[in-house]
Length: 149
Image (tube, rainbow, N blue to C red):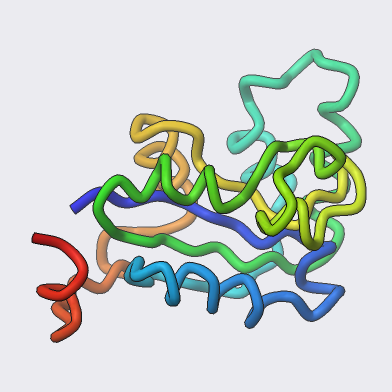
């Protein structure tokens, strides 16, 4: 079963959207296997956004993501990386599909409520930045047989 990393960003936490966002993934049928409310250190933020070092938005992004708590999560499911990306909508909320998370709650490209891994490779890297293997819970749900053949 595939896993992905999702993070409700400071604007999502501050706007009390945690429950609304989590419920969307639960209703889709994905399984939450790890979650923590945390302050991200500058060092962790720099590792997370390492591919953007030197870009004009890097410093603002690091400052923003470390400014308030986030909710770091790992979700599991069939094709969960692509499915979650579809549910998130475009990075720029102005271009996001109506009804997507960013289309519903996002206000600005720099305040777009949620981060999601863009590939299985990114998911593995990001999960390892935020969670140890012991923090991820592998379990079965009776409903699983009804969701995936």
